[in-house]
Amino acid sequence: MPPSDQPRSRSTPARRPAVAVMLALELLLVALGFGVAQRVDIGDDAPRTPVANLLGPDFVDIRSVPSGPAAPATAPGAATGTFTWDCGRNENGHRNTANIVMAPGFPGQPHHVHDYVGNVSTDVNSTPRTLAAAATTCRNGDRSTYFWPVLRTVGPGGTPGHTGHDGEIQVPVEVGLTFSGNPRGNVVAMPQQLAGTVGDAVAVTNGGAHAAATWTCASTPQRRTTAYPACPAGDRVLRVYDFPSCWDGRRADSQSHRAHLVFPTEDGACPHNTFPVPRLRLTLAYDLPPGVRFQIDAFDGQRNSPLTDHAFFVNLMPESLMAKVVACLNSGRTCREG
Image (cartoon, rainbow, N blue to C red; front, side):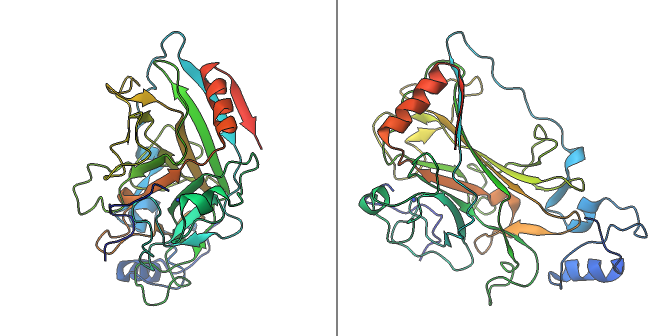
């Protein structure tokens, strides 16, 4: 059976300080891929080697990452508003291995676990009818489902028998959901059941054409990387997902789970025969001590690479709420609910 985040046809669219420890021992444990804490000592007695070098090749010191490009210029009359709302941070522990976008009805692999906010019923048996009738963690009544692979510290405490996927799951300290407009014009409402996909769970082995992993630190949001960031002490690790926002006007999903909802061009314009819808940014923040290795759940063969980070949503906002979102964005207001 294929992994649950790889495309599969579907009949219905759906959901600090550091302690003094022997540095040589810690480095040996890191090299072997196991250890009690998988923490790299950066105490006063440790050699002044950059922390990212000690953590491994998938990590980068965020201070070495250049700032990203500026946002596209805004045309007169464009939708410049933002709409932010609160759906919690998965305090209720809603997790499973299903993926109702890529492989509905398929239970998924046990070492690839998703975190959820929004719709509390999302699981392998979800249907449009069950999702529409379920409760939600969103304070404004948004029944949409939003999900992404869990992040773990490297070490014991995870799924027995799945080497490379062990470690304690980290609950985000904050989950941000924000809709933005479009810099070239107004937006139209998302249809019910619209499915959104960003990133690629198998980017390591399929060429990375759809990779969209974005990692940074809370103090340096303009510095973005596809590597795990080594953040300064006291800072938060951020995962940022900017979803595509140009809809074909016809389908809620497509065979590739991407063709119906695509990214705008560099100037923010939507491609021909597509229409701008509210652009979703999902941001996850984590409190992780410096010198502690972490990684996302990933499929076999993907090396738990940060490049494979990804996320999904299925829009189940009540139409009246979506109309409120569109009005806010098109009028250039800053709106917040919850």
